[in-house]
Image (cartoon, rainbow, N blue to C red; front, side, top):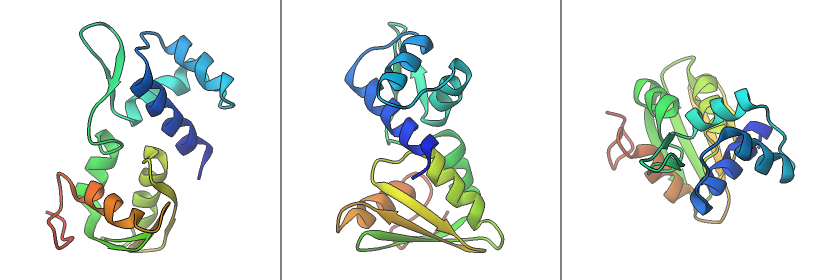
Length: 152
């Protein structure tokens, strides 16, 4: 797992656990947990995890976790199929797009994703837990792919 993915996973958890209204507070919480980040990095991470400010001024993340913004657009544009197998997910992509999709998945900080390997037109997504692949595949398909795994 990349440092960015781990940091974004922690950021998402912090936002789910408490109402935080300032990026410097988030930076301090991340640093205290072993993930030091500048305000600019926190700002980019907030965008990457799909966080927005609610009516109280607190940052919130919207469902589904990790599928927002750049990742959703990349999956919609380049994923051809999403097929689970145990703790793995195979994402078939358009030619030469797999590394971009793998990078977007890593940066999104999805809860169950341990890491990815991107080839030319195939991404192998490694998930935690024996059945993590099924849950992750459902998440990746949401909003852009059918039950058979074919992208829309």
